[in-house]
Length: 383
Image (cartoon, rainbow, N blue to C red):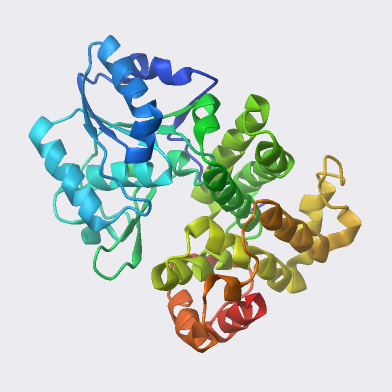
């Protein structure tokens, strides 16, 4: 058995319409003033107002910061921190997708510890306790609600900074699958592919352990079975529930075993070509599965044995190639491109992308070593 150190930091409250309990939960944390961090799309959908109303009903003074971009930047975080200093909240609520939740963490870093976001790039850089936070995810993708990392892009260089600290974990995650029904089809597709990648990557990292494997397996079962269903039946609440729980469990797997080469390859595509994260993940994941499967195929086969080929999962006998083909099929079913060339990526830029991918922290957890040469070959296979 592999040694591990697992301490749950986030209480998970799951069920339709659970957003209405936000005020009660905030009160349990002793808060009387809250900053709600969201984005314009969530505001337009009415979800932010429901959160504000729930807080107000519990007698909690709440203020909204809705300046979050799709990939939160240092500028977004600094603007939110200015608002936090004005209202002096006792609680921060991240209400929205991964961007809103990560921005909420970023604001908390600066408000509670001072400095700028760059000071927290890495692990364990916060020296003071941080405000309690509640996450209310409206997508089923990043699993940020159960992670202690915030991904924040430098507003000038566009480099993504992973800022992690156990103090930055949400105290409570409110999983209300009814909130995810309003997602546009493209958002459902992009976030769903990202969550599936989280389940598959965490299952084979160098630092995987019994805790992470349990979450990875359950996430894979929930996501693999329900992704196609939410694409075909967007209002199917059971399928939406499965996706949201699966994304949450995959986030718990990340917290315990990190990610791998797929995410290392995806980040430069977003930085250089503005390819949306979930799309970049979908482009690279099947190729990384094949690459890792050359040495760790038995791990992938074990995962397939757990599904037994039922409910649309690949036949375990198809092995690594069957899994890669299955994932590529999900990407196509979501209406997303499967080749880099379809996204405007130029062959002459691949060495530059590989050099950037080699600097990504997540690549160091990949089961097979990935240097520039290996990453370049993976990009070339995806062209």
